[in-house]
Amino acid sequence: MTPPRTTTEPDAHPETPLARTRRARRVDRLLAQRYPDARCELDFRNPFELLVATVLSAQTTDVRVNATTPTLFERWPGPAQLAAADPDELEDVLRPTGFFRAKARAVMGLSQAIVERYDGRVPNRLADLVTLPGVGRKTANVVLGNAFGVPGITADTHVLRLSRRLGYTTSDDPLVVERELGALLERRDWTMACHRLIFHGRRTCHARRAACGACPVARLCPSFGVGETDPVRAAALVKP
Image (cartoon, rainbow, N blue to C red):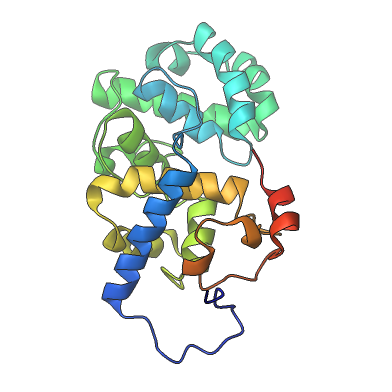
């Protein structure tokens, strides 16, 4: 059996665009088998809760956000209530998520904008979502894909890293990665493919020490060898 190509081997035959597309889709199918439960790991009951939770997830973990949002939405269940929140009380609730002052301003600002511009409803168009305070394309695509069923590429930290490692792009620019990754996959698969990449990045393809020897797509990855290649030691690195 041919071993995976390491990053030190010369690339005598550059990959064609068609071959890259086929490889990307095969990688996605294999990741679907490894992570059948891949999903948005933020808890939410409606588009507004997901929007706020996604904004709060910056520079912290989904686990921390999920521990905070029940109290948040019990006190301020919708845009009108959150827009009128007492800033000191809101900051106190958001303190565990870090950068709580900036996050309080952001969620109050986006809530006010939703009330004033969109009759209290979270808009379901990218062009509208990105006009809200603290909402960029990444956050907008999370909301569109998971709350409205509109396919989108979520160019978060894991998606950016894995897209480069898998040879889908050479760019660090989220907009470029969004475009190039989207061109490789069927549009209907965009949202779930990103969930699978995020799951893989959190559990196996770690930033500092990837578990290459336990990776289901090792033979399709041009970066095989950036992490632990021994199967036993690699398996110990995989997070459940």
